[in-house]
Length: 209
Image (tube, rainbow, N blue to C red):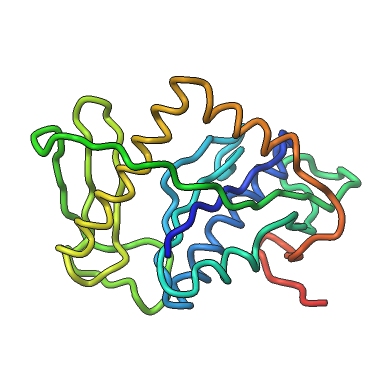
């Protein structure tokens, strides 16, 4: 099963955008350690380095639905602001929700280019350092997607193409303003309080209750 997972700052301040970036990295690492494939395929850059207003992750594999369910809702990050020293607030919320995967775009073979590179990135036992990662590029639009999840270059090529198809479908939605409306709806629907998960500090250490 494959799902999309969106993390949003809810139009919150820069600290919430930092929490989005930390949560995205944590989800990818946790997914890999659970035997799932996870990659950020779309992002909105935040107002400062190391921050994201929102991130869209592609989760794939057996158990993906249960994994996604364990993250859906509001996530609380407890940390003094590194951007505004002395600021009294320490609680920052982000929203995490699943999104439907739209019908993939069809594209011509001649419109695609593939590049290989070493499979680095966030972790777990499934990442390796051989040149097996594959980046799929749609030449007319400039959109691209990368897969480094598998040890096989062929498998990564297939996964990168599938991710690119998802991005192409979303790109078409954005042009029609449909995808943008969904994104703003997600921003507006962020609920604070009763977090499904709580993390603490810049190291983003989970606090279990």
